[in-house]
Length: 289
Image (cartoon, rainbow, N blue to C red; front, side):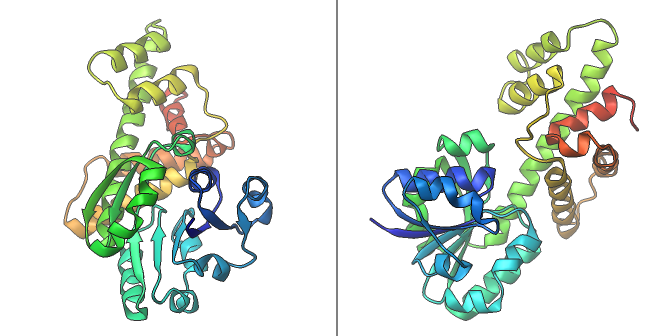
């Protein structure tokens, strides 16, 4: 039985940590709001009172919301504590922060792996995530058995951690385009008297197969965006990450300004801002621009 640390027990982190626990590992869990750990502790996990306790494991993982949340636990003193250990950041953070963390870990004699994931909370709980992993080859080999518990496939992107974050932002940029396209075209056809459920089924069962058009198409057709599987504010954050990747790559995406405007309008709406990010479809359906 291996002792692992896990920090960040939101809807994604709790499902991943439970997979590790059910696989027979001794899991030290920490969350800023202690109550979030109660269910895992009841299932056999051990509660860490401070992040340092979770970092004491030879291998630890974190799944946090954004750059600010990651920096709140991975400060200079925490990174020094990780000397001789491996930490895996599974959050979708900026590539620039990933580069800074990788340099700090290297200076401290610690191994840093980036491993953002593709999948919603139910996918995490089922161990069916796609994991985008990048970092030192030896560290990737060390953590692969744990990735095998968490996901159905690990995509090894390279040895520079920030590249995994760039790829994740680029994937989400594609998803955002799909959400907006579904929303716009549903608005078109339902004003022609077409059932939106029939239309999204047509899309997903003919030319646009896959989980995005099938899953999100159904949500949009029904207008069912709560509880959010992925929060609107996080979607806007990921759009900003895509903008950073584009700028650093010398790319000027033509659709980016329009997508930013749609998200900002959704976040200004008191209902939509608390909804799943697929609710950007309602900006077109409700003529909110």
